[in-house]
Structures are given as structure tokens and as C-alpha cells.
Image (cartoon, rainbow, N blue to C red; front, side, top):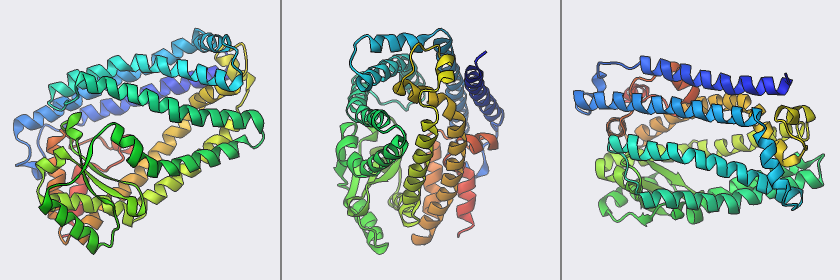
Amino acid sequence: MNAYLTFILAILIGRLLLDIIVETLNLRHIKDTLPNEFHGYFDDEHYRKSQQYLRDTTRFGILSSTFDTAVPIIFMVAGGFNWIDSIARSVHLGDILTGLVFTAILLSGQLLISIPFSLYSTFIIEERYGFNKTSPRTFVLDIVKGVILTGLIGFSILAAVLWFFTTWPNVAWLYSWIAVSLFQIAMVFIAPTFIMPLFNKFTPLDKEELRDAIQTYAHLQRFAMKGVYEMDGSKRSGKSNAFFTGFGRSRRIVLFDTLIANHTIPELVAIVAHEMGHYKKKHITQGILRSVVSSGVTFYMLSFFIGNEGLFAAFRMEYVSIYASFVFFGFLYSPLALVIGVIENAISRRHEFDADAFAATTTNSSTPMITALKKLSADNLTNLTPHPFKVFIEYSHPPVLQRIHALEHIE
């Protein structure tokens, strides 16, 4: 058997087995007794509901992961990638446009396969637990907008990268790295103004007392920003969140309408302080720099697998091409992506503790942040006792109990 094929099959099956082990451990780690810290926020029925929500989403996730593993394996072994390539080549558009057609067909197939799972997750599971607010019209429009943005932005970047590798094969990885890095940085400024408003409505916060409290806090912290905005998060879900967008004076504080409805002003100020802490502690800048370095490593590694005949033989391809090399390299890169993801999650969890501490210190109390975390956990049916291995592999935020305990020591 082809060595690359053996390796890729081992990667796909191994990742699925890892997912199953992680999720099984997490389910077995469910505690029947409500942690003392959450008395008054969960009653017995609500806590049982959160546990059942975890079971339902986990089982569905395992089913989805199994399907997402089986389809590529069957498609690869059956020569499906070569069939798609033959369709793309039959149009005779040249290497770059052929590559775009090849990628478009693959992404279209992936989208069609994912839609039934998205429908079930949104309109069955999330609906069952009272989270879904998405209308069928919004669901369809989100897909259409996503496809258009992928076509306009994603395919422009792909075309540029293909051109680099076609024109300057020896240094293409460097040019691609520079181009993609510049795009990543530009998106920090472009997304809040042009892309995010395509999916949600952002309006200046009209709740005067809350707005004044946030602006006063921001002024005390010498934090320049464009303003405080409310986002119609309830358009899609009953879950709550808050975030910052942009850099410098273009920064915006964004609060979900569901968050505003369920929290007091001190709690909302504490949440804003937490998000501001990420900026003050340079977490955002560090994350961008790590992403830039990671993309450089990725492109450099990719350059060694362009046109690799053994790799193409594993996918039963008749022709060797630059564009298909990108897709096939993705399979080889996935173990490293997993390791990078674990490291990034560990850094992110540490940063969350730092941001919590910043919020508690600068607001002169950890109590509002603690009560906000408890309310968010109850409202979002958060798993209060995840398995440590699940946290290690997947969690970008520390478990809520760890965050609460850390905040209690700041008092």
C-alpha cells in the first residue's frame, strides 16, 4: 500500500478515535450533584437539562465526526478526487482557473453534505433546548452570504497563491506568506465595517446608564474606542456573548442583546473589562503574530509537497497539479494543526485568567465577574465539570469553576 495513503488513513481514523475517546471521557465525567457555587443559579431541573444538552450535542458531534471521516476516506479510495479533477480539466481554462474550479466543486460538495447536519443541530437540538432563534430565511441567507464571501475573498487569495507557485515556484511560499499575512492584518479592520454587518445588525447602545458606565470605565483605563454597540444576537440564538472588534480608535465594544437583557450594569462593565484586558495585556496582538508565524511555517512545509508523485498516487490522481497539492497537503498537515491547536488553547486559557484578573482589579471587585460567569453558565447550559483531557485538547477558555476560584482569590 502507498505509504502516504497509509499515513493519511491513520491520521483520519486516529483523529476520529481521539474525538470519541475525548467525548466518552467527558460524558462519563458528568457529575450528578450541582457544584455548591451554582446554587441559586441552577435548580435541579435546570441542571439536569444542562447535562442532557451535553449528552445530545456530544452524541450528535460523534455522529457528525464519524461521517466527516468516512466520506473523505471513501471518496479518496474510490478515486473521487481524480473524478473532480477530470471535470475541472475538461473546461480547459488554464492552471489557475482550473484550480479554482476544482476547489469550488470540492467546497460545494462539502457544503451540501454539511447542510443536513447544520439543519438538525439548529432546528432540532438547539430548538429543543430553547436556544434557536434562527428562521429558515436567515439560515438560507447565511449560507448564500457565506458562499459569496468565499467566492470573492477566499478565491481571490487562492488565485494569488496559485499564481505565486506557478510563476515563482522556488520562493512562492515566502510571497504567499507575506500576502496572506497582510490579508490577515487587513481583515482586522475590514471585517467589523464591511463583513460582520452583512450577518448582524450593529446599533449604538441606546441604554444611557449602561453606556455611560462603560464609557466612564474605558476613559479611566485610557482606552480609545469608536463606541459601544448592541448586536442582535437573538436573531440566531438565545446564547449570550460580548467581544471587541478593530484596533486603535476604530475599536468597538459589542454586546449581544441577549447579554444586556440578562445582566446587571456592574456585571456588563466587568465583562467589558475582561475583553478590554485582552487588549491591555497585548493578547490580541500576540495572537495575530502567532498566526502569522504559523502560516509561514505552513507555507514553507507546503512547498516541499507541491507535485509530490507519491502523494498524488495515494489519491489515485492521473495528473499532478499545484492546486490539488494544496488540498492533499491539508491531510498531511492535520496532526501538526492539532498540536498547534492544543498549544493555542493552552495559551488562550492562560490569557483568560489574566483578563479575568484585569477585570477584577480595575473594577475593584471580582464579584460582578463571578456572578456574570454564573449567569452565563446557567443561560448557556454550560458543562460545569468537563473532563481535564477534554479541556486540554479543545477548551480555549478554562472551565468556569476554575475561573471562579481564581477570581475568589483576588478579593
